[in-house]
Structure formats: C-alpha cells, structure tokens
Image (cartoon, rainbow, N blue to C red; front, side, top):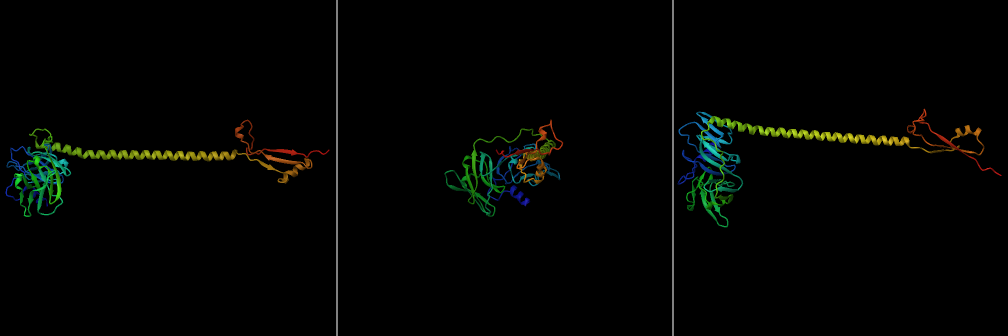
Amino acid sequence: MRDSLEDSCLRPRSSPAVPGLICCTKDSAGIHLSVPEDHHVCLPCDPSNSSDVIWTLQDRRVLVTRQGNYQTNQEHQHYVLSHSDLCLLQLDDSDDGEYRCNHQLVAELHVLMGHDFQVSVGWTLLLPCRGSFKPKQRWFRQKEGGRREAVFTLFKNGSWKPEENENGRLSYSNDALQIQDLQPEDAGEYLCNGILQARVSVLSVPPEPTSIPSSSSTSSQSAVVNTDVVDLKKKTNPEKVLLLAAGVGLALIAVLMIVVCVLLTSMCRRKKKKYRHKVSQKLEDTELQLWSTSSAPTETMELDSCSLPEEDIQYASLGRQNWRERPSWSPTIQSQVIYSSIITRPAAED
C-alpha cells in the first residue's frame, strides 16, 4: 500500500501535458504549497548524483537521512524516503515549514485546516476529492453570487482534462486537484462529484515566512544534535506534567482526609458533651416524695410511743443535695437523703 502511495505521489497521471508535476531544480527557490490536513504530498530532490541525502524541516530538525546503504528515519509512519524524494503522510499543522534536501530549499509547506481555506496569491493548492469513491471525478467551482461551472475532469483511465479557460494551471498530482500560481479569480467553492470540498479565499498579501533564519552551511551532525535536543524536550515535558498532576492529586486527597477526620472528631466530642450533661442533670434533679403513716407502717410503729393520739406525722424527702457545691460540709455518704417531719394536731376543744 505504501509503494502504491509513493507511486501516486511521485508520478503524475497521464495527460496531454505534464504541467502539474511538483518539481524543483538546483537553482530553484522552492515552491509554496498549501495542502489540506490528513492528506499526503511528496517533495522531490535531486542529490546531484550523490547517494547521500538529508531532509530537514526549518533547517534544524532532521527528518530522514541516507548515507550509502544506511538510512535513518525518526517516524516511519509519517515520512517515507523513496529514492531521494520525501513523502509526508497524514499531514497536520506540525508539518508547516520549509523543507530542505541537502541544505537546498525545496518547498515551503502550509497545512490547511477545516474547509475554509485562505491561500496566498501565487501559491500552489492541492484539493483531494473526499466523500466520493467514483473513479471519475468531475470538479466544479462556484463563485459568490455566480453560477456553478466545470473546471476539471479526471477520467476512469487516469487521464485528466482541464477546461480551456483555466490557462493550464490546473492538473492532477499527489491524488488531488492541483491549482498552480493561485489567482484572485480562483476564489470560490470547489465541489467534486457534487460534494463540497473547500471554500477558497485568495489573499493578496503573502503570509509571514515560517522559516527561522539560519546558516545554509549547517552540517548534518549539528542538525542531528539539535534534533535530539528538541525530541528530548518533547519527551520530558509530558512526564513533568504527569508528575505535577499526580502530586497535586495526592495533596488534594490528603487535605480531604484531614478535613474528614477533624469533622468526625468534633462530632464525637459534641455527643460526649451532650451525654454528660444529661447524666449530671438526672443526678442533680430533686425528687419530692410525700410519706404518710399508712404508707410506712414500720416507721409509724416506732413513733407511736412518743406521739399523741390522732396526730398525723408526715415526712417529705427534700431530695439528694449536691454536696459538691458545699465543700465546707460534706457527709460521709453523699447519697444520703434528708427528711423533714411536720406534726399536725387537731384544734383543742373547749
């Protein structure tokens, strides 16, 4: 599958002419290429009859190298080296930048996100046909407030034909409709087999260059060292974030446990206070009891010898006293009950 993809990227479809092939010469300043995300593109390189190849991004990140029969590739699922050409798969916004082969600028790549594309005038735009599995592709463009008009046709046999009024700037390359030297009249909605693919706006002012100024004589060894440093930072940063998150989580758990312990302790203390208060209240409550001679026969019999007839003796318990509040006089038995007697006599008869 990868071999077929490389062939589709590097070899243009058969056509009357081949103006759509992405290429560059030794003296070329490179091409400006805009490609939608998740698509692929292949960039050619002429190593000047040398088998040694080094591809760099922004002239500091080494992507793929080849020295004789020895080849290095950091991301095999993302970069493919075919002969000397570099194929990029599943493009995303991290692929933006300038690509150099053996320190020679090949292309400046801009990855487009979503469906609303803003492309600078003079750039090359790739539009893949998504959502349609028909081998024949019929491309239309509809300008704002205008009619839908056909601009390009890809036939089942792989040949393609642009409309006559497109001035030869439309072709088929990298499995996509390729529009070279984008102009303001190219703006509008692009549809493939009736399915909307993109809304293209053409900017008259080119965007700021994405390259970082650096010497073109940077050696491959220094580029490899810089790459290792960048990759090391990328690897360590996520680890630091995970450790920091774990530490914060443990701290929060510890704080919650402390709060729960404090709450439980305070609740237990309150319950104990309430219980002690109730017990002390029960002990300090006074009980008033009325005693009659009929209800206490034994005590009445003992007092009969010293009491007058028809006299009523009544006893009342004044309750247990709180001896703790009277430290000056405390009986030996603190559960002692004090009784008071009242003797009532009938009125004397005349």
